[in-house]
Amino acid sequence: MKIFNSVKILSLLLVSSCLIISACNKAPLEPEPITIPAQAASPTLASLLDNSEFSFFKAAVLKTGLLPNLASTTARYTVFAPTNSAFILSGIPSVDVINSLPAATLAGLISYHIVPQTLLAQNISETFPNYEYPTVLNPTTGTAAFNPLVRLTTYPSRRGAGAWVNNVPVTEVNVNAVNGVLHKVYTLISPPSKYLWDSISESSDLTYLKAAVNRADSGVVVADRLQTALSSFGVNLTILAPTNLAFQTMLTGSIYKALVRQGMPAATAYPTAQYLASTPDVFSNPALYGALSSQNVKGILLYHILGTSIPGIRVFSVNLPTTTTAIKTLLNKAVAAHPGLMAQATFTGPFVGAATFKGAANSTASKVIINPLNPFATDQNYINGVIMKIDQVLLPQ
Image (cartoon, rainbow, N blue to C red; front, side, top):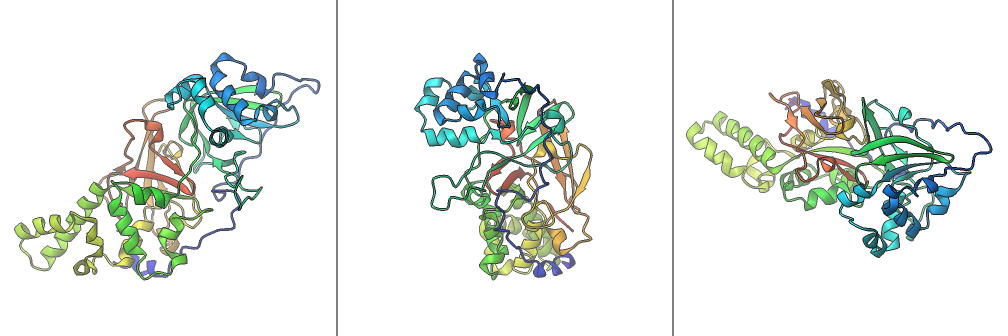
């Protein structure tokens, strides 16, 4: 496989010096301050929460001690404010439940909804990929590794009449205050708490992907392993994760063709291929090391990671171009001339979208698998990136 001859020279360099998580997307846009009379003292962001539709959010802000911050006329904030219905949709049915939660838990959740600068809707980018904005949430607070510069970031985006923060719809924009702006959101925006590798290791429908990463990392020093990047603070990756069924389908076809080329009758080759592909152990089968060498497997996996370098880019499907567009992957780090993936976002309404990705050697596009319980949780956000589950393995050649 010629394209993989270059993969062996590729080293995944981690950027541990990033002080803001995922700080290697595009730089934040310059905020546009709201013009207000010098003598104005109201409304503040705190007083906007007196509206009855924010009673749940205000109770949470009060418990976390953040209300004075939102009342300060010298500060500037953007608040992505969940209404009462947003709390209910997110599984928090009452103020009593809010008050029963530990203050530290609430502080992490609420702080992730607040950006320490003014971001008006018209300044939310429509370009790809998502711009990032640090929140006031510092995940190192209260730990021995406390660093005052570290912040978790959010990724607002806009497409036509629709706007999102991460993949959560913004339902109303530009409720102005003297100390910033408030945007209403459809559900709570959950701060990430796990790494990409945690999810891949724990997901029952990604066991083939886990085995593929282990195969790609065999014989590689720890610092240059894919698993290391997927487990690291400071990187910012978007993983297109084929499900087990997607891997089984691809592997069955590939092994079948290899067996037929070796002279095995087709009637015997297909069930043999199905059997060999029926378990993730296929990646550790010495008889298949020619086709599934660590170099070949690594090349395929790099083709499923968006961006051309570590620390990479973080992408949510609602921010993808709405026309079919070529997007580079980490494989381009080793094979610069490769055309990359063809990607497209499609929308069935102002907020509900889907995405497709087509590999250079795929006959049809792979679809991002929609979460049936919550379509706005389809793109899974983690500390060091995003996972989109897809229904085909993307083939670079």
